[in-house]
Length: 346
Image 1: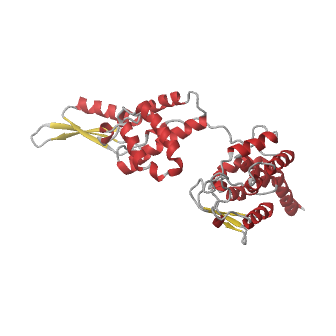
Image 2: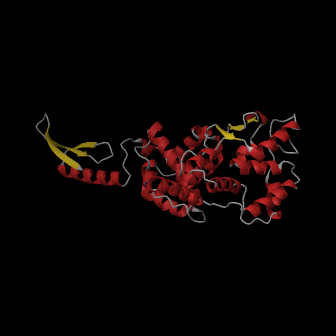
Image 3: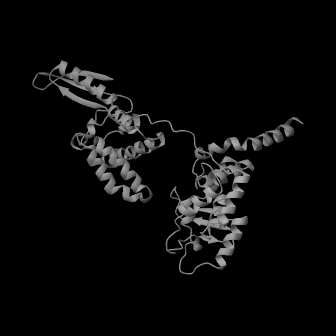
């Protein structure tokens, strides 16, 4: 809301002090000799703030989006090694599209129009990641560099992502896959796949596994490099533990990697060839390695594990990612409700 106050100057003249106050934004002030100029300023400032075009600092007018992206790539991305390549590519797309614009010109309306171009030929999930990369760059520019007063991407609607995919192996499919993994030219493919099914570990976590990470006595694995950036322990039980115990007795001493490349033991195995061969031989349709993780989670849900327990085992920080398995635990939920009703109404 804008207000204009008339003030008498020391020389006897009159000036007009204008102020704009909008919820969620710092107040803006300016002084004019004419009341008409003050009214125009109030109207234009209110409109600019509401549209995300007004910034109290002059940095937004001196700096371009290209400069912001360049600095972010140089200073911030090196601290995010796992996403450096993908986010660098995403940010460079934004730079090519809008890099010459001053930050004051990069409004939610402009970003919305550019998002429409970004959506051409890309899946909604991909578009969301491009927008998230730029949004974080804006946030750093607001909080640390003070080049902006607000993040204009906050007001741009993100495409709705489809529900998470759930593809898991039935009993016959699992038996066929494991049979062909045993016959693979890579001698440890069977153990690797059993470990994935038993623990729900990601492919990258499994391939990074070293013998010092495995505690066969206590029955656990320590994952140092995870997608969430946190270290976590994974229980090692049953058939997977037996297979790793057997491998440990005859392991190679020239590498610490559990699943190493036969050509270069210092490097993890390149899994694409052996995996694709086993999947094709097992006649599995629409099945990827990551679906072993979905399979493990689905088996847990069908065997009575709660969503909280599934999230803890898979290493998710929230329950959002495991909601896709909720329908598989309906039978377990029904048993719990039946037990409760019997107890209180018997």
